[in-house]
Length: 202
Image (cartoon, rainbow, N blue to C red; front, side):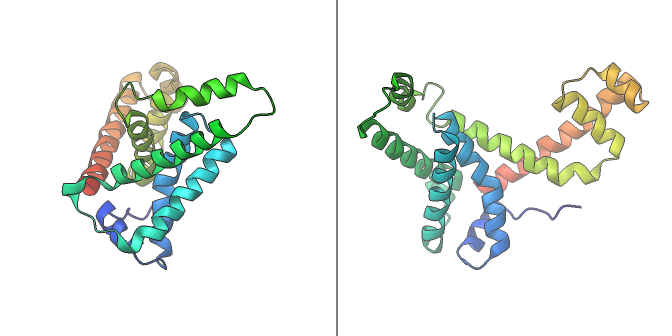
């Protein structure tokens, strides 16, 4: 069974100790993919997004010893979003100002359009990526709480998108039992994600 996650507040407190390998590993597992996918969604290529993610992680490492978590000043993920957004902005600005020998007009147009992608709010994409990562982490944590058939019914219907009747035949379950299994797992996942978010926001 998976180790229980550190609470966000506990995790942030432990990050101050640069030698706490477990805290840093969990931090990178949770937030690294969020930063990477957010950068990719803003138009960065794979290698550039990976470099930017490393740069953001270095910024956190450099500043971890000074971080004092105060929920009145906003969430940690809000601060991390600001750091990430600023680094992306700086990267894109440097790309715009760099002479292009390729004549790649499509890439330049994509870069020009990127900062304006705020129509859903300043951090809609960030929150979506964060929710996706929390959901993946919640799945890792709760999978062991369910019988293999229950988890398979959930996975095959909710993730793979297969019909309940089809999944039921394969798992020797009725379609109704498949729906019940899916609902039980989804409810548990919602609870786990909510708990993780409350731990960070408190």
